[in-house]
Structures are given as structure tokens and as C-alpha cells.
Image: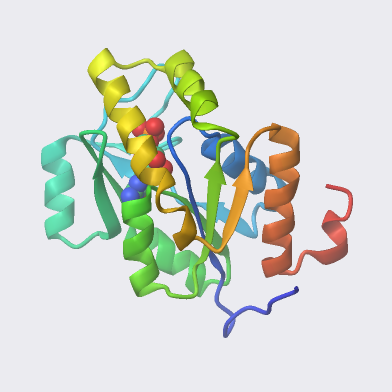
Length: 201
Ligand code: 5GP
């Protein structure tokens, strides 16, 4: 499969999956591999930065009031309330890059993905799965930097997210990170036509 660009526009890739499944590491690997052809959409969120996170890098951080004002100005292609915080995809970044022929990767939750699919039915939907729910729970517990309440919320949310798997065209099980990385690179290469260049992923 080597799909052509639609009228010079870039492909829109949506990567979803439960919290703790390794989406961010995998998305970073894609950008590392395909930049500047593939660009990562930095979301806006009202959640507080975690240790090591920098404004404008992992997210654009803002207050809930600022987020709500941006919703009113229609600045998001989609937004959702996840784990008690707002998250949204800036519309301008998305349209500017797709129009310029660059491929955009969105690392967003299932609610946001369903909304984007309504506006971009041709979006390439990729779901990242854990090997088992028990394994996912242990990963979420290990990396939990939030309260116990928030942890419970994330586990419940993970169950919900997993029920959307069938809505996605592609699914990758992240059991071994290197294997999952290669699979994801293959999927991207099939769409963007990077062909031979990625034969040694
Ligand atoms: P975290 O707080 O762990 O960084 O992200 C929590 C969840 O929010 C993840 O599932 C992530 O994919 C999702 N998320 C991040 N940015 C966006 C966004 O712009 N829109 C939506 N709908 N979800 C997002």
C-alpha cells in the first residue's frame, strides 16, 4: 500500500489508546523518523504541568478560564474533558500544516478522535493497545504522579478507551516497544510513501 496525497494535502494521523500505553513515546519516535514531513500537534490543556514538562513543548498549558475563552473563539478543531482537565487540538496548526502538505500526528483521546473523524473522515486512525489490562494497570500505577483519586479515574478511563478499539482502522499492541515502534513506522510509511527509505526501520 502506497497511498497518494489527497490533492497535495498532508495525511492526518490520529493515535489513541489508554493512558500509560506508550502513545507519547511512539509518537515521538515517528516525529524523530519523519520530521519535518510529519509534525506533531501540540495540544492545549488546562492540566498543570508535571515535573519535567515545559510550556510549548509537551503541551501549551493554560488556565481553565483561558481554555473556555479559546473554545468560545472556536480555536479548537476538537476538545475534550479528560481526567478532569480540558485538552484541545489547536485548529490553526492543523489546517496550516495539512494545507502545506505536511502530515500531522494527533495524540488525542477517543472522544476527540471521534470528533475529528467527523470533520476529517479520511483521517488515519491508529489505536495502541496494552498486552493485557493487568499490565496496563501496573504501568499506570508505576508512573502515577497524581492522587489516588486521579489514579482510579485513569483506570476507569482506560477501560472506556479500550472499548473504542474497533473504531480504529489500525491497532498495535505495545508489548515490546521496539516492535511497536517498527509497526507504527510501517503504517506511516505506507501512507506517506516513504517506501525504500524506511526499509531498515
Ligand atoms: P496526559 O494528561 O496523560 O498527558 O493526557 C491524558 C489524555 O489526554 C491522553 O489520552 C491524551 O491522548 C489526551 N489528549 C492529549 N491532548 C489531547 C487533545 O488535544 N485532545 C483530546 N481530545 N485529548 C487529548
